[in-house]
Image 1 (spheres, one colour):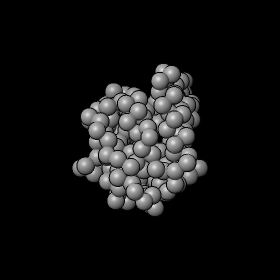
Image 2 (cartoon, one colour; image 1 turned 120 degrees about the horizontal axis):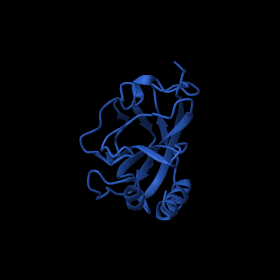
Image 3 (spheres, helix red, strand yellow; image 1 turned 90 degrees about the horizontal axis):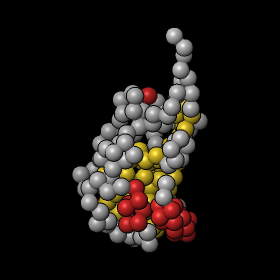
Image 4 (cartoon, one colour; image 1 turned 45 degrees about the vertical axis):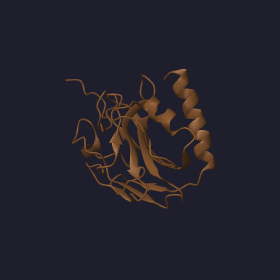
Length: 173
């Protein structure tokens, strides 16, 4: 991760921590249980349902970042979504509302790509939802750093959950 991204992330986190918390839940991903294979890169690679409650007043749009801070190469982005309507209460499994825009993840795809840690590793996957006081003017396919910069100064609140996914160790043949 470069210094610019770290600096922007710190500014964004600081702004979000002063904003109003709201609720984000993942109905199909049980806390303290591994993420089901259906939502992993080697399984169905389907994005899980995201449920949203109590969005702060004044919210104009929502942005979602899904990443893995435990990746061997540093922060690994699995999904970037912005310009979700402030009225969104659910991002359906495997779908995205038509008004939303997606960014380029660390796999270089403009899509959701699920967990795929190295064999034997267990990683945390953070789902962070930001309430913003603006629509973002980012083009489809923008990267993580561009999204962080665009959100800076616009965060009204943040909701966050994480789930884990262990990958079975390699079994010698």
